[in-house]
Amino acid sequence: MGFFSKDIGTLDDLFVHTLQDIYYAESEIVKALPTMIEKATNSRLRSGLEQHLAETRNHVRRVEQVFEMHGVEAKTINCPAINGIIKEADEVAGEVDDKEVLDAALIAAAQAVEHYEISRYGSLIAWAEQLGRSDCASVLRQNLEEEKAADEKLTEIAESKVNLQAAQ
Image (cartoon, rainbow, N blue to C red; front, side):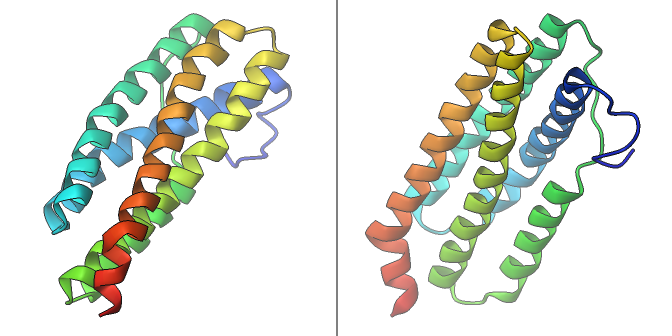
């Protein structure tokens, strides 16, 4: 099913489809983060990624909770966007020999993931509200706030030390 397929006829259909998309994305991120953690050499970056892995596991549980609240089966659909972002991160990380530059690349890759998630959660929250599902929106908002905080933390780590070290 394509993103704008004929199977999406209503806002509720679009909401469920996008919920399946973010469910897949969060599940794939849980699988990808341990590799990023292993490659990170900056201790603050490594710690931040470890913390976000724990948060991401909670994001998966919250998305499952929203499926249940909305009365639909929790299932995923393939998300080419997150697959591409993760693939690009793997490729770039594999091409970088300098550890400081690698940390900068890992931050950029992690922020690409965060920005994707932020856009998806923002849409899901707006649609949930429009559908009269403020209960679902409230749960999704918790994920959105944690994604924004992770993005801000990555920026702070990059600007305070990692980018400076990579430039030397």
